[in-house]
Length: 228
Image (cartoon, rainbow, N blue to C red):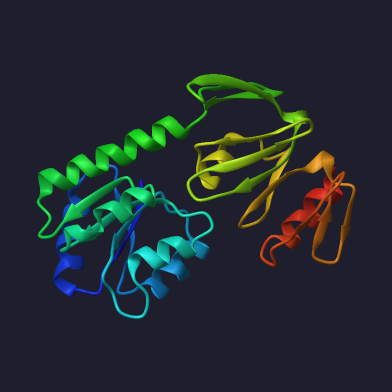
């Protein structure tokens, strides 16, 4: 489980880093002093969990979370309990009050692991996948999927005949799909490669829609198209 810590208080950062380093399976990728540093990490690293202070200079933790298109799972860490309702509305995994005790942190880590486990595919095969949706297992054939759009802790799956929303992060859903058929073309979009009709500039044209290509994804996309 890859984590980052975001807190403007040196002692709070140090304590949380020490605790997480001691928990088997947890890797602290980066300890950040503010939201700007954390944003840079999220652009380049694969992060499963974000331990986020709320009251910080420059940008508060809640405003930072709202600004993220596809955030990892979030645990708020704060000295103030007045933000608990806001944390619930933002669908955070847990809410830890400082000073954070190790047993309480362990509970939060288990909640994260449970959420990650739930988000993984239940079963998959060469031509389809099963996902959890509305308390049932839903079979999706790969050739039914046109593209996947990332929401906050959810994905909107655009199928040939309908659109559904499922409780997966963009990162986890991408891992569930076969790389030879699906590719991330933008922070917010995964496309079914055989559905691409044309590429024009920095846009991908599907049957009835055009999607933007992120600059960091374009070269990889063009290479994949040439191999098809």
